[in-house]
Amino acid sequence: MDNLVVLADGQAAPANTSEPPRRPKWSDTLQYIANPEKFCRDNLAEYGPIFKTSVFGGTTVFVGSAPANKMAFNGDNSYTKIGLPATTMEMFGEHSLFQRPDLHRDRKSALRPGFTGRMLANYMPHMDQVLNEHLQTWQTEQPVSLMKMIEEVSFDLLAPLLLGIRLDQGDSALAGLPIATKAELKQQYKTFFDGFYGLVKWNSPLTTFGRGKRARAKLMAFMEAVIAQRRQSGLAATPDFLSMMLMAQQDNPEGVFNDELVANQCLLQLWASYYEVSGLLASWMYQLGEQPEVIKQLRTEQAQVLGDDPTATLPTMEQLKQLTFLEATIKETLRILPPSSTATRTLTKSVLLDDMLFKHGWNIIAEPRIAHAIPEHFSNPNAYNPKRFLPEQGEGRAYEFIPFGGGVHACLGAQMAMVSNKLFAIHLLHKLDWQLLGKADFVQFPLRKIKGNYQIQLRSKSQVPAS
Ligand code: HEM
Image 1 (cartoon, rainbow, N blue to C red):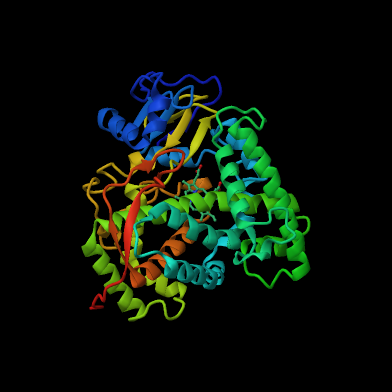
Image 2: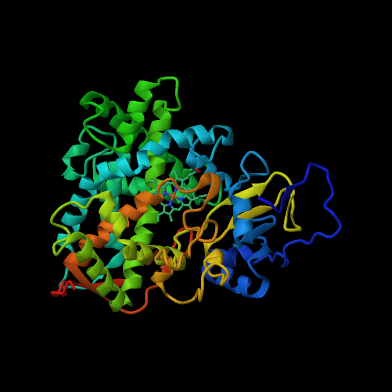
């Protein structure tokens, strides 16, 4: 990082430095939570891609330019620490990637084999089966809730791979476990998720945080029982994230993995993926509902790469890679409707970036809603134009396109999210047409998603020529 200077403790900033513009306002947190999109857009227009706020207390600088994103993403163990609220950190648990920055690199390297292309190829038969089964039952007579359908399919897609449980045989596969039904598992998971965003760190059944902690304890007990079952049934038999970790533990008992970390990681990876992937799939489908021409092009590409019945056989990873226009539409959804903000960090030292001073103790949030709206990063940023991501146009460079964060804490599941969306798209485009019923409202915080009451009309696909 050429223009970044980390100041020593007590070292004064040179005289010619400036601070980021804008005075923090008392109403910033409320305005950001109510509508992060508007908050970012309005301030970007008035102050540019770096500005000061009081979001979540203290001074919080929002950044979106590539050098500032890079600065925010790469300060671990040097000039930043994770700046998430105490409730969130406690819900993560001590074995997460956000605790113990000294162990982050080792833990992340140990988890990475669960998300490589080879591992994803192992996950694909399960994913394909779930998508096929779900989409065949999607109701075409009546309007349906888009988000409800997507959340159902996403849970069944991801939970077996990340928690190591079967869901395709009804509740019988959960018999004997501390959570005995899928409905309860989903409910506990929702309570756990909500606990991350509890405002008060008071461990009581009366608080969102307290209820989240209780759900967490229950889910941990559940995972310990799943681990015991898996050891009995044989680790190699099921190619999933759980087996990957347990086999690594068996090979190196002194390594990163102990049972508590394994259980915690299963819960956290589902946490990291379920809501984000659901938000992405629903937004992608919604956005395409307004783009019949793009849908046509996607079907043409699909036929070229996968033939007239693209669901007849399981695609290979190589074929998924060849669906470049599909990938571009997914990226355009992530650009315009990113599910979440990224790096929330606190500065442990003052730094100068291009002569702008960021002070020790300030928080930084790198915001895709800013980075993705800057004309230096994306030409005509307000237009929907997936082609911008095709290799010829080459937009979406590192630190400019940041739906998955970047740098040290870059998302471990980005490829898994892409594969999930691509397989979903293959089944959806082949089986169904869909029509939007008006404009959708979005829940904006903590993750962006279409509201549950928004409905669309599905129809069995009319014959679309494959040329
Ligand atoms: C649309 C889907 C997804 C989006 C938009 C997304 C977004 C993000 C973002 C923005 C970060 C960076 C957070 C930070 O720097 O503070 C992140 C980190 C992470 N994500 Fe994702 N994610 C998605 C799917 C997944 C999936 C499918 C998994 C795994 C199954 C996953 C696992 C992780 C993990 C483990 C980290 C932390 C990495 C670290 O601390 O080094 N994510 N994700």
